[in-house]
Image (cartoon, rainbow, N blue to C red; front, side, top):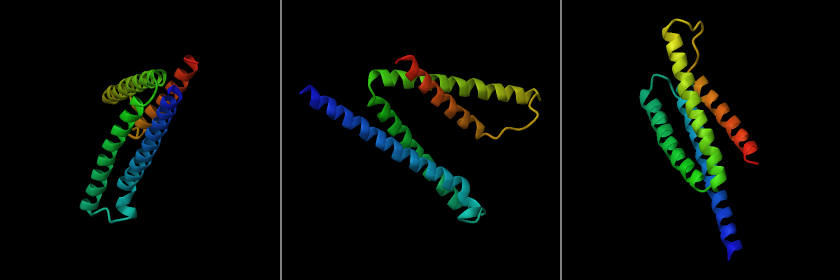
Length: 139
């Protein structure tokens, strides 16, 4: 009976992972559509098409958040702890780093403007490093 439960839990974990991957790819695709569609696929002076792409990205992004929450709930306790710690570090780094940039910019200490896309890229790197560090820590 226990082997069946473990197999079922493993299957559920794979299913939530696959769903998360699908939602992630869909979100990235709608993000690319919203970012590069104006000018490449339609005239940038067509705000209806651009708003439709942005709205699609928002809706799919909400679906991604739900899929990620389900993915986390499907993980075992140790994996959930590692990811929770990594998410806390990532949120803190984004929050502190973002506001540090804002106050440095307000004080005219920033020589070059930084593209806003740097923040989520930085947060992604911090998250991956924190997950790897957590896996090493709890080996």
